[in-house]
Structure formats: structure tokens, C-alpha cells
Length: 418
Ligand SMILES: [Zn+2]
Image 1 (tube, rainbow, N blue to C red):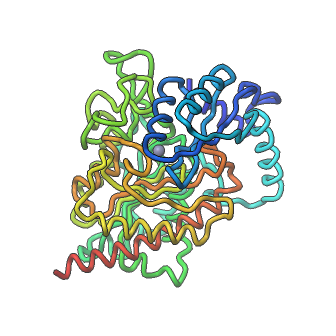
Image 2: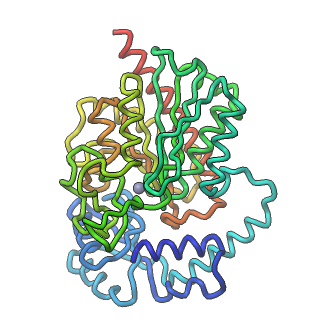
Image 3: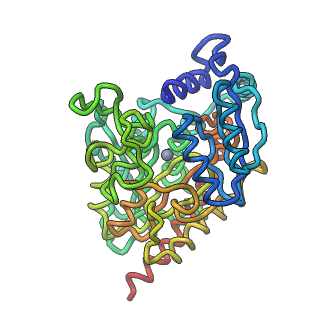
């Protein structure tokens, strides 16, 4: 159901259906909820399961309010439960259909004002991304190597770029590994990955030359194009496709923050690494483990830099982990839009919610010193960030990536000079 709603929503965003297209959201409303402490977070988490409400934004106690979309049928019960728990709430959007119509109008005026858009200023298709990666590899053979990790479940090649000024074989350089669209409805993560390639390869500015001279990069823009993977296993269930790739890694697998409902967005799969796409990420991590200094698993939304572990155990280098994450968040905040939240830095369990089997945790477990989940801004749009914001998100996020790369590089030098 949620997948269907999101599909309709995305289709609407891209103006591919006709007038009255937002009617299914008539009567849906969005409520802001103030969170005082972890107990309030738990109440919200339980309501999400109990009433099936759609949490647009998880918020953070004492810092950011949560945003929750409810239907006409469950709004009364939802608000009653909040009241019972003494939680403050307010109406953020009275009618989601009307709000989406307004977003459409903003989008069409933006489209009219833009003429020659770049690929990474918009939401590109798989084919467009593929052509871009091929072109970059062909035009910059001395610094770019295109690797085909293998086919996705549906048979499309999953490709990534290795970017290096020294043919990727200088062991004194750390590796920065960035991947996007592990949760593919988080569309805005894709242009951020492409823009990173653009700034490293096509349009390096003088001030950024050190990033390629001192560091090797692995960038994987497209893993898949949906929240869940597309695998189908009739011996397990015929009801739903796929699993949550970001619960499918072999680290505390299937323990917390997962659902045994095959159709849930947090169903981790029957076994760890059941999905080809998660195996490709694992293989990149293991192949380069001696040199990967920072792994950035890019998601949206909520403005967070998160680190392990999802069960609230802190890695031994937590002070350094926090340091680099804070530098990344601060660099982004310096360029953020006024209406955007400040980035929140912290352990993923304590700042957000419990999880197991995540890519971030797996990177940390196998020895990446700085392994992060980055949650890009959603403003008030959640997963459906309109394309007129992409350029802003690309640019500000690049600042964070550059800052974290430089600082992680210093730690790498220190580690290797001992
Ligand atoms: Zn995600």
C-alpha cells in the first residue's frame, strides 16, 4: 500500500498523470508532533505499526518535531493516542492533495525558468545515468575506471566508478566510498552522487585539487530504484517483492528495527546478503578494506549524519567518528537554506531509531574507521523533494563530502605514520 501511494505521488510530481491526480490524498493531513524524550519516540514508532500512519519525518527529542501523515479514518485515534501520552501536536498540512497541487504549480514555474539543465540538476533515468558513467569513463581514462559489479535482480548492470589520479594503486592514499539509492525512493540521493563525480572529474576547482591528489574515490550512484529490492522468492511469499536492502547486511542481522512482515519496508530478508545489490556493496568494502577510510551510505531524509551501531553500542573510535561527522554537518549547514534544519550528528539508535543489518553498521564492523549514514534534507516534502531544490542539495552536500574527506585523510595519515 505504501509503495503504491509513493508511486502515485512520484508520478504526480513528474506530471505524468492527468488533472485531479492528487485526489487520492483528499482528506489526508500531516501533523507535527513534539518529542520530549525517547519514550515519545517509542510511542510514535508503535503508532506507525499499530495504525499504519506514514511518518514523513522522525524528528529528534528536544530538537526537531516529527511529521506524520494520517488518513481521515485514523486521524481521531492518532491524535487521541498522542493526547493520552501528553504529547503536543499541531496541524502542519490540512489537506495533502491541496499541498501537492501547490507543489505542482511551483514546479511548473521552475521548469519554465530553466533552460539548459544538467543531468544532476534533475531526477535522471537509469539509462541517462548509465550513459553519463560511460561517457565520463571514456573521456577521462586516466582518472576514471568504470566497473560493472554485476546484474541487479532484474538484470540491469550495477555500475560504479573508481576515481584516482594514480590508477588506484597508491596504497598511501585513503579511499572514500560513497553509494546512493540503496533506498531508491530517496531519489535526491542520486543527483548528489552524480554531482560528486562532476566536481571531482569534470569540473574540479583549484581549491579542491587536493581531494583527488590525496584521496581515491569509489562512487556508486544507482543500486536500485525502489525502497525495497526487486527480488522475488515464491517459496517465501507470493505477496510482495524484495527486502529492505539496508537491513540485509550481515551485522546483528534480523534483531532490532526489523519486521517479519514480508511486505514491510523493514523486512530484512530470509538471510543476510540474500540480495545481489547488498553483496556488491559488501564486496567493494571487503576488496578495499585496507584503504577505505570513509564509507558514506547516502539516504534521505531528515538532515542527519549517523554512525553505528544500530543497537546503541558505540564503536571504540566514537570520538573520532563524531568529530568527522560534525565537520561534515557543519560544512553543509554553512550553505543550507534558511528553512532547512541544522544537521544532527549522532549514533543512529540514539538519534533516530534502532536498526540492524544496515550498511553503516556493516562498514563499521568490517573495519572502515568512518562509516556513516547521511540523511539529506527533505524540507517539508519528505522523500518527494521537488527538483528545484536538487541543485542546492548537491552543492551544500558537496561541501560536507569535501570537509569529511579532508579530515578523514588526516586521520589516515596519522594512522599510517604510527
Ligand atoms: Zn533510506
